[in-house]
Length: 117
Image 1 (spheres, rainbow, N blue to C red):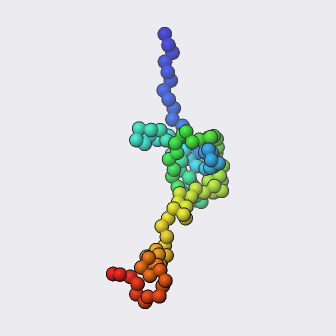
Image 2 (image 1 turned 120 degrees about the horizontal axis):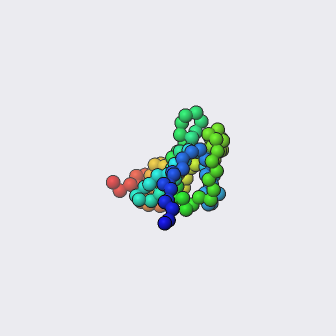
Image 3 (image 1 turned 90 degrees about the vertical axis):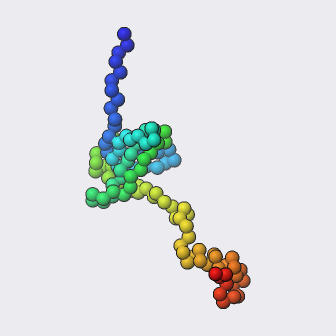
């Protein structure tokens, strides 16, 4: 007779999470299921009671998880703030886009009102 398999325990707690690609985060982690797949949710604290970010991470990208105390995880979080959006991913500010549109209709810039509409 085979021994019974113990029920799986879900991990939850304060950690330092290291991902492949040298990304290091501190925060509170727990397991979550999204679209039938397992992910780790990490809530990354900011100063005080505010949250910097919440990220859902594929466990296949994790190099190391170190359980730590809350103060240690908060200290790592403040030194390794995630940047969810990089500047190059955002559209150009409106004045720059307007200049680009104007240049399409008047490449030499010698007309007073080059917009066709």
